[in-house]
Structures are given as structure tokens and as C-alpha cells.
Amino acid sequence: MLTMTTFCCIRLLSFQLRSYTSMTIGTQLHRAAIEDDYDSIVIGSGMGGLTTAVCLAKAGHKVLVLERHYTAGGFTHTYQRKGYEWDVGLHYIGEVHRKGSSMRRMFDFVSDAKLEWKEMDPVYDRIFVGSKPYDYVKGEAQFKAQMCEYFPEEKAAINTYVKLIKRVNWLASPFFLEKALPPLLARLFYRKLTTPYLQYANRTTGEVLKSLTQNERLITVLSGQWGDYGLPPAESSFAMHALVAKHYLDGANYPVGGSASIARSINDVL
Image 1 (cartoon, rainbow, N blue to C red):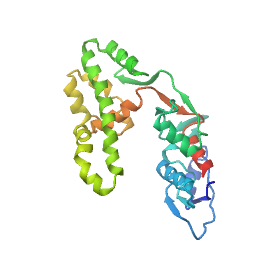
Image 2: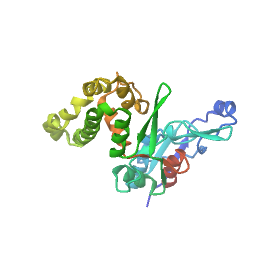
Image 3: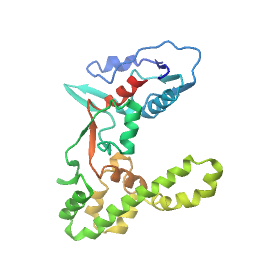
Image 4: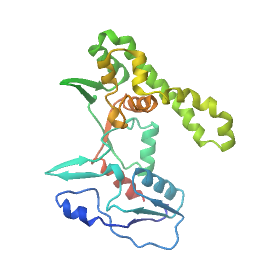
């Protein structure tokens, strides 16, 4: 049984409410009474804070979550304008359509399996280079076939690219495992666990893609998801690119009820 978790809205942004009377963002929270004793205090109710809070609560902690905004959820907020609802951040998630995947198990854990997902269409991303569209199609074989249809002379580069993003994802597991080891073991196994991954993490996306092909348009298309991780190919780590690209390779999903339903389902558990 979960212990009590308190949400405290420590500052109501009234100027936002006045300025955006036609806008609804999430579920408005109300000021809550604060008790004297808590096992854990979480500052911020973004997804990191909410996930931490629900894990602590499930471990039996009495948790206080402090939030300066008037609703929880961080970049899972949604807002409405002129009859349309918009997500402020999150807009699709990979892997959760497979119930046994670690991503799905994580969401099921923090929401008590109440969060529902709807699989998107097979074309989960469409990249425009000028006026020409290029589709990212669900499934490894389908993705490669579609890219080879666009770039028939680059079949070898496309196949190598897909193998590479899968390899980097495999190398990420020991890299992150090192972070969870006791200090002595982490120092002992640091080089063995991290060096293979860092060989790609320390190279830019553009650098790695140019080692596979000289076709600038193909490079542009393959790096078209860089908005998901925030840096252009000349600056982004190829490891981050590979993690994102592989994450969506089997398709994408959208939370039923919009991205705000993620925070709402966790709030219900808390």
C-alpha cells in the first residue's frame, strides 16, 4: 500500500492565467497543507521528479513533491487553443507497443499499468529536404527497403548504418551498467565497460555518417530526427543519435488522452 504523497503548488503563476485565458494546460493543482515530517522531498514535478516520487512511494516512503507551476508533468503538458490540443514537448514514444519491453514495463510500473498507448501509422516520421518528403517506415526491414528505394546506389551504406545504430545501442548497456556499480567495481571495470561506447559517443553524428557515405542528401535524411535530441549533426554525439534512431526503428506510439495523460496517470498512483 502506498504511503501518502503530497503535492504542494508553491507559487501560482497568476500572470499566466490572466495572459492565456483561452489556454488550458494540464490539470490545475491547488495549494496543499504541508506536514512536518517526510521521508523524501522531490523538487519539481517533471517526469524525472514524478518518476522518482512514485518509486519512493512504492518503496514505502512518505513523499512531498514541490512544484512552482500550477500543474504537474513538465514537458508532458498540453494546452488548448482554438479548439485544438497541443503537446508542449513529448509527441511520440517507441517500444511501448511491446508489452515485454523495458520501456513498457517502466511506464506500467509508474502508472500501475493504467497508461494506455495507441500505435501510430507505419510512417512514424516524414523528413522534408526542400519540398521532397522522405518517410521513416516502421520495422527494420521496411525502413531499409524504403531508404534503398530513395537511394538505390547507397544500399551498402544504409545497411551498415542500421547495423551501427543497433551496435551502439547494445554497447550502451554496459556503459550505463558501470554507473550503477559500487565505486570499487566501477573503477576496476571502467575501461572495459565504457570504452567501446565512448568511441561513438565522442564522435559527432555528421562525422560518423560521412564515414559511411558521401551522399549529402542521404546524410541529411538519416539525421532528420536531430530535433528529438536537440543538436544538429555537426554537434550531436553519434551515440545519442543512435539511441534515438534505434528507439523508433520498430515504430512509434502516442499516449491515449495526449501526453498529459502520462503525468495524470502517475499522479493517480501517488
